[in-house]
Length: 408
Image 1 (spheres, rainbow, N blue to C red):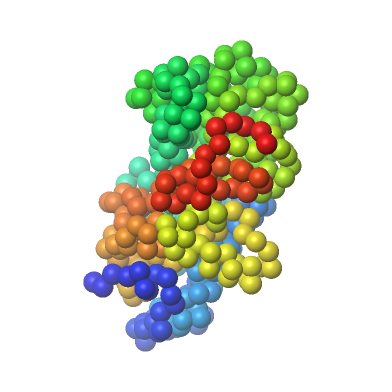
Image 2 (cartoon, rainbow, N blue to C red):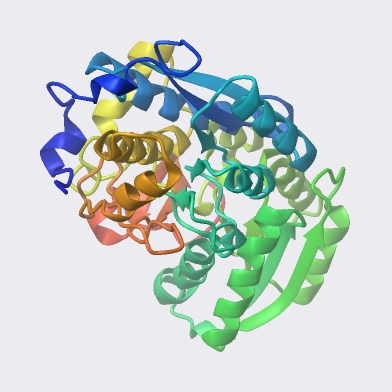
């Protein structure tokens, strides 16, 4: 089976052929209907919508080149912010909307229950942004994830301490007091569990581990405990509102650790940096590749941002749209090669996908293991400097050196 090359992944194909028998759906619609399940409302709406935009741009790119399976793609949206909504919406997408496969979802608490329903219905569920390790550990045949997993975030956040901060501070890593702070939902628990295991494996000094409710109103008590424990580095996994509460509580306590290392989500949003102000400068972050990145490592990120501006009239709000564009593009290509949305045939096409690292617009490659996890997607080390989220690692992707302290 022919594989996509760097050329096909970075430019629109001239034409896409599909079997004539697939040109008309069983329900009479002359379109290929695909579900798009994201949190379009509630606390996660901004990043849910940003994630959807990457999928939308990938679908529109393919439609401009001839469509999918001989028909234009129609994305049918489902709005889910929790497990109950996820189950109801994904059932509606499959039954009433006749979606032949489901894309999602940014949120692990949406992805896990929704993918289980889709698996039982015999369709494919294609995850573009949720990172919980549990997602790909259930032996599902139709589930594939194009983005990194929580274990990648945990490993790289700890590596930032030992390989970046310790040399800058001229400190021995075992002497640095490290605390883990996380929201107690699936996302926070997944990353924190991996961080704790990584700290233990590297024989580093964990001084505290604290969890809080996702809708916490104040983190003042948590900050006092971190201060009392002598935390020099805080590994924080939370959403935008949590981050605002955390930095506000630190300002009220007149205390800062030497460094905060975030794990994506609100740590990648310009709105977060603007709301917190100069105290946020220097914050490190592990996340999907963002737009301030060396073009040689992400050959197409700049062009994607330009297309995004033309399409939506504003700058991208996060690298989540770029990540979902890259993932969706590879999945749509596999659908076209499979010639069908049949789960088993699509599975074979996805498992045969072999895209080298550096051959997609954000630098990821695509190669799925038998659990459906893309093994060639890794997060980057980022840092807020002068109001911009700059890539500072790995070295090939970096556009600036790391600052060793918080605050402007």
